[in-house]
Amino acid sequence: MSTPTATPTNTAGERSSLLRLYLTRGVLAVVWALVFARAHEDVDAVAITLLVVYPLIDAVSSLIDHRATPDGPERRVIAFNGVLSTLAAVALGAAGVGGVAPVLHVFGAWALVSGAAQVVVGVRRRGPELGKQWPTLISGGLSFLVGITYNIQATGDNPSLDVLSVYATGGGVWFILQALLLGWKSRQLRTRTV
Image 1 (tube, one colour):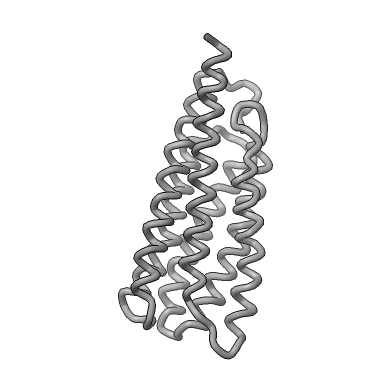
Image 2 (cartoon, one colour):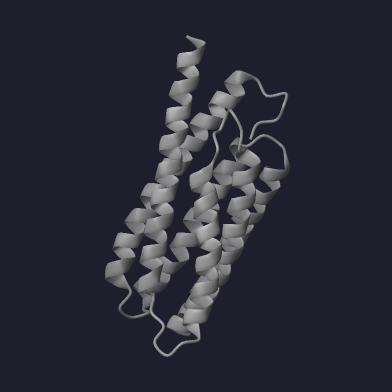
């Protein structure tokens, strides 16, 4: 959401920046999911590396988003999410040594907290310039719920990392959908001004 003093050019720039960021973030999540689906049979060095990379993608995305976002409360939430994702990467690297259950616990905790942060950002960005943000809100809400589910699964008899590929694919699709909606909103606003 832009500040009340933002010029139309700044808002258009923010929208364009978010569109590219969401699209790139979505595609990276889907690619990660495809690679991880084939590489996680054992929690070995390759799987652990991929586990560390996924939250780092989110951390870098948060950094880019933070730089492009005008000052305001959502910017602080984005910064928090970037730090959280960096800590999650470190924690997943350590948890990978312990096997599937610790990985699900850490990933679940990260998904829960970052999902809540995503909902906050989505609510703050709702408005005429950036749209209703419903894909972001749904994605954040699902991430929150999935985080709870992963922690429950981690305590079960046969926890599996298969669910992480599904999570990343779903998140990627929501990011791509949000990018497409921002592109549609940009075209709609350009048509009105012509």
